[in-house]
Image 1 (tube, rainbow, N blue to C red):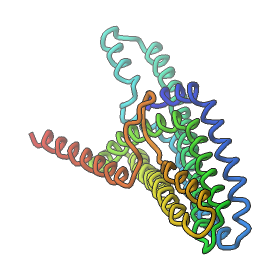
Image 2: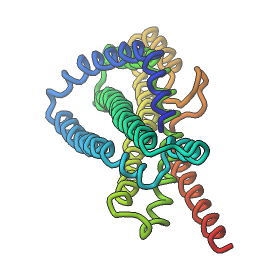
Image 3: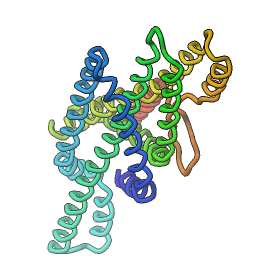
Image 4: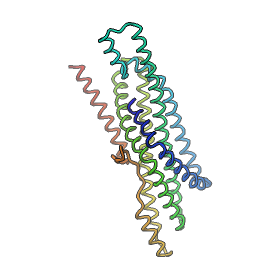
Length: 318
């Protein structure tokens, strides 16, 4: 967890400025496009329901991360799985430290754990909320374009405006992409580890620890599940909507209008790339977030959890 926070701080230092610029551009696009469409009652109701549901999920995540920072420290001290316990134990065994030295070292250990816990919860909640908010903004923009493309009569000007907006969204996302790709990669990686450990503790150690500590691991499993179910469908939904938009706009490029204008429009739409998100590291795109990502993620979690449970049971039996 500490390593993940360090990575996030480095990520903010290296890519934070570009991420803010990309965020502002996406927010500007959403403001110009969606504000006009919300004047229609049907679209307004659709957005209100989506934002109410999103606000509920974000509030749930924020409250849990606020509580986690007060539960992580007692849990680490009780379970003795923090990074400072074993060095202190070895130092005590080797040098036979006196009582004042042990107290001083343990106080230092507690202070470092407190700083780490608050920083971990702060940076993780910030990154998660930022990703979810960006996904929601992009989903709002593409949903508006989708609604507009479903009209019976769509003028060439509106189609050109839609394709321009789609291109502007992709350009804005290019500035945010390094931050998003690296953050997504480590978020999935660390989420996988934390999810597996929490599941193991929830299933295996339910009768071996105090209820507050046990409930902490149980709540982590719930929160990670909530975050995965909220982010991954939004991410691959952007690809689906973008692909459908390209199909609809291409189907509208028919009729008795200006042949040259229609031909140019068809070529422009043909060259339009569907919008998709990636996870990567160091500028390398490792895998795309699509429909299979969520299934594969939970398959890996289930497989790793079962493997650990079986190996632990065999070890205890042996």
